[in-house]
Image 1 (cartoon, helix red, strand yellow):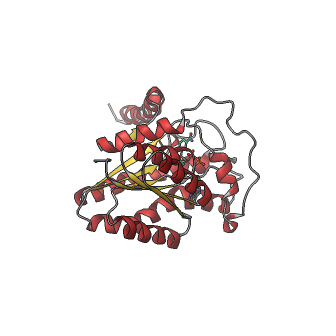
Image 2 (cartoon, rainbow, N blue to C red):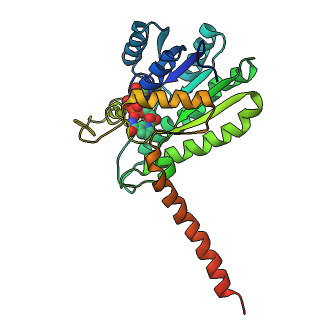
Image 3 (tube, protein in one colour):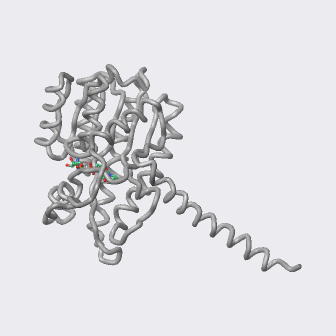
Length: 277
Ligand SMILES: NC(=O)c1ccc[n+]([C@@H]2O[C@H](COP(=O)([O-])OP(=O)(O)OC[C@H]3O[C@@H](n4cnc5c(N)ncnc54)[C@H](O)[C@@H]3O)[C@@H](O)[C@H]2O)c1
């Protein structure tokens, strides 16, 4: 994927990793449409890009609303003609014990982290299939999709990110014949505003805004979002499917899959014990 001169859309681009991806795309010579539920945040990122001499614009979108995504796709294609990179990066986190999560909690997290990506692909992909230029979709999941819920209270997030990984893998298989590349971004800990943007943007139909945490994650060491953005854009340019930002977490992934394989071995062992000698 040639980033220089490309037309790109970053959804959830107003903050954190999305801002990092938008800046990195612009740095590599792309023009960027920054879309976010917080229009003022998207406008600030577009302004930041413009100040660095690249072209960017901002638009409001709410990924829990398929009409809002259709309007975004319509205006993006009418402005750009063709789109070459689409980043589906909007996401939310809601920490709660698995047995305390309400149906509304589940609906909200799945509406943003899974259905928002599905609906964005439904809005953009038909025109990407029709256009002559190749394109690339990058969906943001998480290391939670590869590691599971390593700590308590992450069930909603972990389930939604596993679903994102599964969906994106299927998307890759089905869009490849149409010249559309697909990646899944699985970041480790990246400095962002996720806890706060999640709390203040919960739509009324899922229970409305929550109280924002103070100094969420301030004490933790995290990768700067700009670095995560550069890693993502380089991997998209190389056409990689799985994009990881913290390769040092590889032993944890190996340990998870080793645990799965141990249960395969246990079944083989059980059959050998059962079988008449
Ligand atoms: N920060 C991390 O350590 C980390 C790690 C793994 C995965 N992620 C994922 O990265 C993505 C970006 O999160 P971030 O950490 O940069 O947080 P962030 O809060 O800084 O950015 C998320 C952006 O999504 C926007 N957004 C939220 N709901 C939306 C909606 N309904 N419609 C449109 N935009 C919406 C927010 O306004 C915000 O600008 C998320 O999918 C998150 O799950 C983050």
